Every structure is written in C-alpha cells, then in structure tokens.
Amino acid sequence: MESNCPGLAQAGPAVPVPTWLRRATLQPQTLEDTAILAGAAIGALDSIVRRQERWAGAWRQRLALAAAAMTARQAGRVEDEAALRDSFLLARPGDFLSIGPAGLLLLGWRRLAARPAEALLTKKSLAAVLEEFGFFTRGGAAVSDLADELRQLGASVGTVETLSGAVAAAERHGFRRGVGAWLADALLAQRLGWEQAVPLLGAEPALGASRPRRVAAGATAPTIEAGPERTKALLAGQARAALRAIDLSTELGRRAERLLASAPKLRAKGADIVVDRLLNDDALVASRGDKKAAMSDRGLRRLFDRLVDLGAVRELSGRTTFRLYGL
Image 1 (cartoon, rainbow, N blue to C red):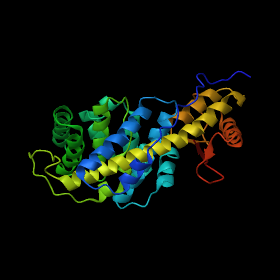
Image 2 (image 1 turned 60 degrees about the vertical axis):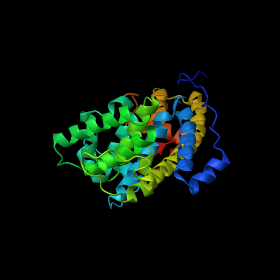
Image 3 (image 1 turned 90 degrees about the horizontal axis):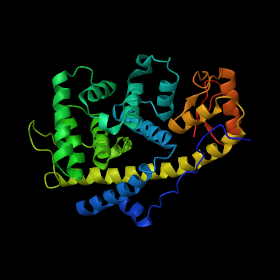
Image 4 (image 1 turned 45 degrees about the horizontal axis):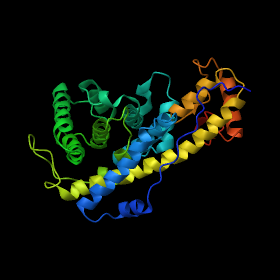
C-alpha cells in the first residue's frame, strides 16, 4: 500500500556522547575545564540541530515542557509536566487566559521552541514573553532597555560572556523565574546560527536556585574574571542540559522511526497530517477533531488507537477520557 506520508526517510544516527564527557559534567573541577565540557556538549548538540530532523519540533516542545515545569517549581507552583500539558491542550481553543499562570509559563517556553531564533529578542517578542512569565506591570522602557542590552551582548562579546550576561541582564531588570535562562537559550541559538532555539537552561534547577550578587545598573556584564563561580555553574548547567537534550533526541528519534514506519499502514484520510503534527509537537488531544485533516472526533480517536496498537505513539495522560497522545 502506498504511504500517505511523503518523505519517510529514517532519522539520522544517534549522536554518541563519550563516557568521559558524561562523567566530567557531574563534577567539573575548574572554570576552564567546565568551559571545555560545555563546548563539547554544545558541539554534539549542534550536529543534531543542524540535521533538522522531521521530529525536531516534538523534541523542542518536549524540552520546552520540561523547562516550564522547572520554572513553575521555582515560582512556588505545584504544576508538573502532566498538569502543564493538560492546561495547554485542554484549554478552550484560542482562550489562553484560561490556562492560568503556570500554563502561561509553558506558553513562554513554547514560544522559544517554535519561533524563528532571529525573531525571539525583538521588543515585541520580549514584551510578550515577559507577560507570559508573569511580569505584567513592566513598562515599555524596561523592555526597550533589555532589548538594547541583549543586542549589544550578542554583537560584542564571546559566547561565555553572552550567556552569563543574558542571565545578569534579566536579574538587573528584576526579571527572574527562568527569564535569564530563556534569554541565554535565545542568544545561544542566534550565536550558533540555529534556525530555532532549543530550550536548555530552563530545566536546570541550580541556575534558578542560585542567588547571584546584584549588578548595578550600567555595570559591565559579568565575565569569567568578574564572577568565576557563577560562570562555572552556568556552563556546567549548560553542559548537563545539552546532554539531556541529546539523550531525548535519541529516544524521540527511535519513536519517530516507528511512527514513520507505521504510516503506510494507516488508511484514514488525513492521517498524513496527523502524523506530521505528532512529529512537530509534544502531544495532541484526541477529544477534538482535526479540521485541517478533515477528521471527526471519533475518527481521530480511532486513528490514535491504531497508532498505539502499532507501537507508534503513546497515550500520555493515563486517563480514559480527554486522552493525549505523542511520541
């Protein structure tokens, strides 16, 4: 039977991570050693990003979910990944005000994962993400100043200083709860020329829990010499985050292969559209029909049941109603 899904190429080979790199990231010794580890980990991650796999959208959104859950925890909220996924997928279509503060944090991280990297640090984008992170009272001047500072950071200093400077800039303007990690991830993507950013630092508990010294307005962004322990912690966190992203890419790559291999067995009209959506998002809800695929609620549920039987997707909620499916 002919496949309804074009381009069923298999995913690229998994990126091997040397054992020494995994061991070293657990307890880096010096700042120089940590910088080398972070560079090696980001280099390995870069090779995955540049492959532009068909499942990269689902990968980035799964990482965004993990970052949102950690950010919510740092804000003193109780929502975990499952609750955040529910708040987003089960909200009324277009009614993002009903998803609550934690759900808005997820929107912010999903923004990082979905928008073109070059558009993430515009004043308009920054204003939107700051609102999603709960900073509703900030005026336009603060956003404008932050955008200008980030633009200077991205153009004038090295990668290490760019990342530490992004975190410091967020704190200097009073933006905590993961904003610094979001900005650092966006600047890293721009620095490396990635088309879309990969949520990394948001899932690092140490980064959000640290209490760095406050930097006076107008002061130079911290460098390796100005704050070695803080920079070391940031680079170690980035190395760990990159390795987690690599491991997740290996796992989702295998699952995507099974989904694409199952696609020729799907007889439902519009199945190719649903498969594409599964490859590009964290999860889909089965209780709402897919208008783009011209598929009813019942038809969509039957398609997901078939995919589960084939071992191509998983049911993620554990419920008997309002079920959610993804890689």
